[in-house]
Image (cartoon, rainbow, N blue to C red; front, side, top):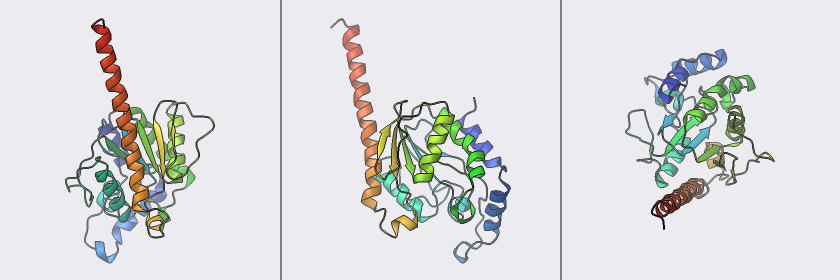
Amino acid sequence: MTSLAHLSQSVIRCRKCSRLVRWREQVSKSPPQRYQGENYWAKPLPGFGDPQARVLIVGLAPAAHGGNRTGRMFTGDRSGDWLYGALHAAGFANQPQSQHRNDGLKLKDCYITAAVRCAPPDNKPSRIEFERCRPYLVEELTLLKNLRVVIALGKIAFDSFLAAHQKSGALMPKPRPLFGHGKSVVLPNRVTLICSYHPSQQNTFTGKLTQPMFQAVFRKAREVLTIADNLESMVVKSRGRNSNGT
């Protein structure tokens, strides 16, 4: 089995989807005025965060002038401002901003990935592009041994996660979970899947997603971990009493 570091290198080298390769590189050669002169990443994005994470966040795909420019998930765009602000408020990030790869941001107990690793035209990957990229998400699910919570940002990320979850050999709940902001379900492997609207400008500018709504999702993730910690502590204490014959 590979490691997350080796998987990241495989992701970065990927050129499976010719349409996405052309687009990500084309965007880097004709940036908007505000990014003129910047050296774009213009490659697929690997996952980012704590290898021992208990929380996994699944997004859709990098933004053309966000992750595709900066080389890190949800970095350098408005969606990232919302995400890292919420992660910081819930204690999963050491700072609320993510501007570039060397800005000192660190995640604790959290890992961020996406259904598709290249910026797609019009933010719409094709079906075959999702399928070609899915093995990377499947491998991450296998390598992240401590997962307790998955947060799916948007219906497409939700569907992509469930497809990868099943492909990884995990059991699917019946009936199949339905997407809805704030909804959660405990999967057969005891991982809690939490749904959230994506923090895209389309959702945040229209008020479909507000900061209190978004931050509540991460507070719920924190609550799941706290309950798990308390249960584990009780088990350890119980074993200690039993070993002492009391």
